Length: 275
Image (cartoon, rainbow, N blue to C red; front, side, top):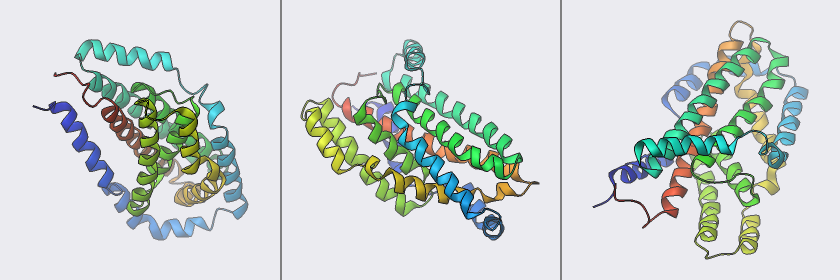
């Protein structure tokens, strides 16, 4: 007989993989699209380029950022405490991951509300800050499942999660999931000692997103800037900033939660406890 909790987790992961944008995101896009198109006129091209460059610099500094955004020891202590309470490895990791996921969403809402009130200056500062929160969220969730995001091989996986979680288009999500799972399979072979790290690096370089980071950052920066255009309207800037940032980090957090759960389950096949 299978483990009910593990089976339930696998069903949740499969449901997420096939799902598109959430209901609120779809309704919001439909209602606000005309106003958003008008608001885009308020954002100079120079600002879009500035945001893109800031995002490129942030993403290229990913390896350095990983050293100060997360306390791995604090995460491990939380997971250990949850494991002691529930006596279930996956459930303990899940509960700890949900804590960090929710905490970062709350932080993003507060950050977006503050920067949204200030209009254009806030928009320029907001987007790099938003992705800092996203990165921290992914890293904290990774550590909940025992993955060290300071390792070179893990950096690529982090970027694929960010890309997958930041898209609101179901077709693009499916394409990004393919790349994410390909990297995942390479890392799985390393874990199972079926591939050495040198060969894994070569294989991951073939699938590399980091090599194309500038184009990714530029495209994403323009996309996000346009989607946040309504922050330029003083009366609604704070509300738009808070709601968008909260939704965005929630999507990225969900992508990290589901992806690291999937890796954990795949790596522990045949090893999981009976309870």
